[in-house]
Image (cartoon, rainbow, N blue to C red; front, side):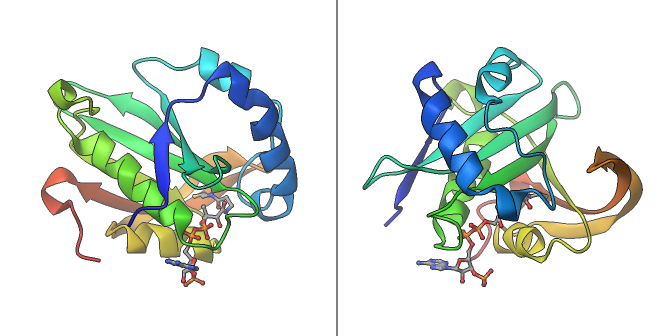
Length: 174
Ligand SMILES: CC(C)(COP(=O)(O)OP(=O)(O)OC[C@H]1O[C@@H](n2cnc3c(N)ncnc32)[C@H](O)[C@@H]1OP(=O)(O)O)[C@@H](O)C(=O)NCCC(=O)NCCS
C-alpha cells in the first residue's frame, strides 16, 4: 500500500519546507542547490513550463520530498525533465520512490483525467550520484546517453547521464 500522496505546494508549506530542506542539506548539497526559503518563489514560477509536486507522508503529514516537472514542452514533443530531492527523516525509507511513481503516473495521465498529458520524461543525473541513478532505474528509466557540461551546478558546468522513459513503457515492471 502506498504510504504517500502527491500535491501541489501551498503557501502554508513554506515553513515545514524550509525546515525539511535545512534538515536535509547535507545530502542535497552535493547535487542540488539548498534553498530552504525557495518555496514561495517556486510557487510563483508555476505555469505551463513548470509543475512542482510535494510528496507527503500519509501517516504524519510530513514532507517526504519534492519533484519539479520542469522544461515542459507540449505540441509534438510532450516532454519534460524531472528534478527531485528527498527529506530527512523520510530519506532512504522507500517513500520517495513511491511518490515518484505517483508523479510519473500523473505526468503520463491524460489532461482530461487531471494528468499533464506528457509522452516522454527525462532524468539527468551527475555520473557520481549513485542514489539518484538508482532512483531513475527503479522507476524504469532507460539510460540514453551522456551529456557533457549540461547543467550549471555548484559553480561549474556539470556532465550528466541522461535517462528517459516514454508513456508506452509505463507502468514499468517493479
Ligand atoms: C536521489 C534521492 C531523491 C533518492 O531518494 P531516497 O530518499 O534515497 O529514495 P527512497 O528512500 O525511495 O530510496 C529507496 C531506498 O530506500 C530503501 N528502502 C528502505 N525502506 C524501503 C521500503 N520500505 N520500501 C522500498 N525501499 C526501501 C531501498 O532499498 C533503497 O535503498 P538503496 O538505494 O540503498 O537500495 C535522494 O538521495 C536525494 O534527495 N538526493 C539529493 C538530491 C539529488 O541527488 N537529487 C537528484 C538530482 S538528479
